[in-house]
Image (tube, rainbow, N blue to C red):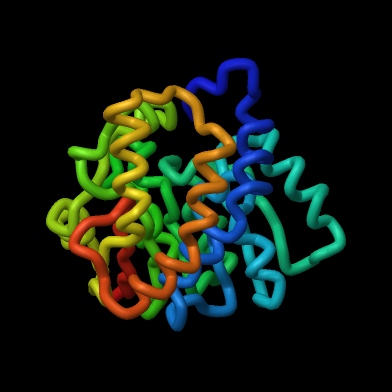
Length: 238
């Protein structure tokens, strides 16, 4: 995922996981009321939501990075309801095995933008998720925000309500809700990625983000912004 200079991808994920926990909690809050008991987290990275899932019947993090899944399985080896599986969701052969886990919720958080054919991901998720199951999506919003930080993270695109709705409408999914998220983050992303053209995720990015969490949580809990760093969607499998 991008160019980490002297930092390996695993070191980056560890740093991101350690520094951004308050922001991950705020991301997860966007799906309050829609997360069931058996959760698949597709493209889980370093398990950013795992610590919030300890009370679930099942939390399975799915990632195509074996180094990460091995390390996380070791980290949670004493927690039998938590597991990490090394799969590439674009590979159709994994769908049957994931469906056997009987998930009622699938997370697709900051994943679609990394896949050239994002429709393949949604197709595979629909094959995994049974009727009535819930798909929780978070993607980066607005192509005009695309800059060096997107290139660093190997993003193919950013999304709008229209483009994501069009993508989801091709599959057996009923859209439940959709809204933009994190207005201050959009401004910061534009400044750092478009104006300053940063090519590294610095620690101050996370500190600023965490400092804004209470403000974003309070204000956007009352009114959803017309623009945001991210786009949230919840859909039901039909």
